Image (tube, rainbow, N blue to C red; front, side, top):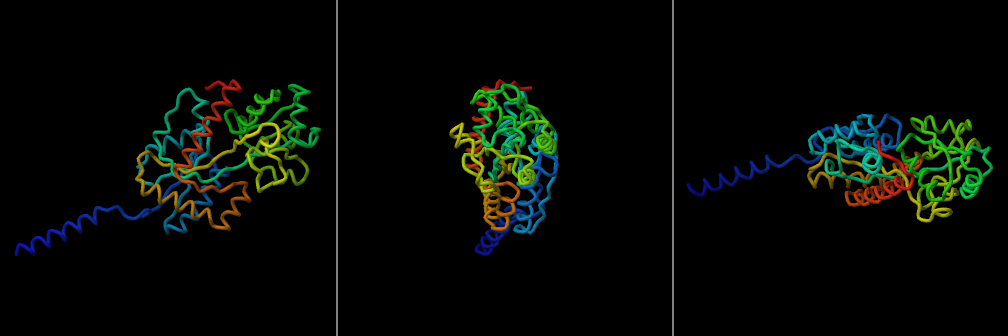
Length: 321
């Protein structure tokens, strides 16, 4: 009788323990928040990767665009969601590497997040209007030095990665080029095509067609190595500023306190889908270099870019709002 009781108790304990175990992740729809309007790099990557994850997981991955406050609206929403992996955010370096140096106070900090996947990087290109008598980046630098204040560049706004790239170039090389901020590349690139600004900094897809039609001239790329998108375009690092490497990273984050097993599952599955040949080619065609790094790689890239941005902000004398 005692033996039957013990066996029954053991069986009940095993059943209760099994019931208490969380269901394998994911067991339902996953939402990926994007802190910008549809169409930008984070949104594009979220949709490409999200579809592949949905296929792999057998559950829907929904993209939720929450623009505003240079990413602050989405970030604030995310940190108030449960830390169960069912609400994530696909964001770029503005949220964590730029905003801390552009705003005196912020409603969030790194401690409020779990860094899951360093998903991709996107090289930026410097493009000149063809009327500017310079065929290369060094030639443009020489031209700008000889004509202080004559030339201008368009960016996606104050505090954008485009502005920081050019302000770093200006302060390092001692050139005077006027900054003209726009609301996005949808405005800055056409401004360069129409010669309202001399130079524009943007991702490859928004420049490709204009470069092909000789309406813009690509003179440099901001990554340390040449981009497969345009291998003939020489990096800034190979000419005037050795070691120069500043391009947007795009990564997945979640609220602080996510279970390690869930983090590893998401990071591993993202890395796997990014190894898919057609997915790689699709992203490359969109001007995106897949990375597929995990939390450690994300943390390392974050620290590196924060140090770079802090240096640029100090050199350029940019004051936080």
